Length: 283
Image (tube, rainbow, N blue to C red):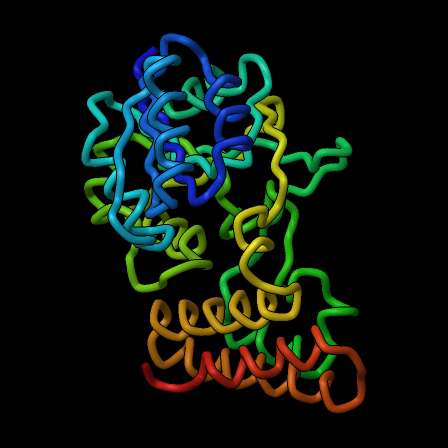
């Protein structure tokens, strides 16, 4: 199988073991230990020795993008899959993703993502434009679905990437995973870069994986903190990628977030508002 699967993990031997053992035996598997404690690192090293995976260790937590790029540098095959460690791959999923990558018009392929209960949690959306930003601020998105931030995977500008397949040549052309963020919005940035090469994104619903969403983040942060960070990085990415149009779109979007926070209640809603304001600040 002409694919290298890079599995990024931090302080988590148990889920990583399940993930690695769900992968095809003929895939090249690279486990990147993103600065785990020594005892966890030894367990991961033993797992790799047992399964034939490559063990790559970072001395500190490099974040998602730098950790993935570290693993990719050890990949030797013509296609690469970037995988979270809390993924379980269903039979034939990788073959189906690789089949779609045989189409030269396709730049990256995404599976259907289920939660541990079997519910579809495939996340997808539109790039933030002036129209979608204003629609979010004014509520017009409720009347016009085409102006909503979220979208069906088949019609989306970007898809969430806990498990994404891409040709190594394409990944090299976009400069690897964008390292602008420590964590979150890397998938949005990757989809933007792939589309700007003139390539399509393929959603492959018959390729299925199970994902325990944000398993690593939830060990480190509260739901409110995760929401703050996700919103901040979404705004930052949208501003940086779209230039002056992104600035206007994000300003409108943030206005809508602040108005919702002003009339609503809840720690998460307030955290989203804080993240939106942080995203508008210059780094």
